[in-house]
Length: 204
Image 1 (cartoon, rainbow, N blue to C red):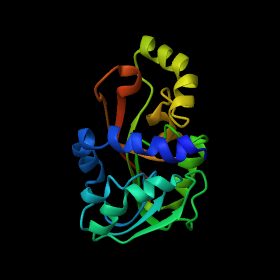
Image 2 (tube, one colour):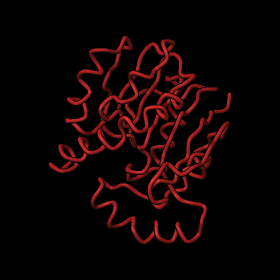
Image 3 (tube, helix red, strand yellow):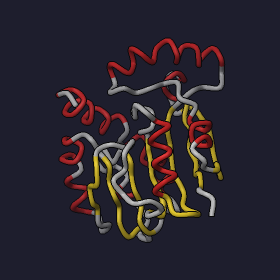
């Protein structure tokens, strides 16, 4: 990672995806129990919202500065946190070993998102769930066309972020079942604010 991606962008994301979306984070982590793997731990913004039933959090995060920004939240949480890797495309945990996976505004930046979701399916125990909130492709054709046009430049400015990924289809193509899904506009222009939020499960 370069200086911008490792040092500057995580600070911007910590602010942009901070207080305005805390209630969303609380909704997404609701129901998590046992051992949870979080892809895109960032600055630990989800930590204060984790239910007490979570016994351990395995964190995947490539940006060193993100971990430093998380220091206060790490000190305040009762949940043991272990950093296990920096690449969501290659999760360094055994097959069928975690109860849940958590991703919040992360799938947009992973280069090979299909591989990452395949890894999610691999590490989840049967009956385990993926809790997610992501921004992605709008169902409105006119907006989606703009997303396609803008994604190359947007990605260069924002760490490889894709505006146009169809999150629901990608999750289902990984072999997971969408148990709940809600789509909505987060605020601001729809080309970057169309959100997918829900829970997907791995078959027993």
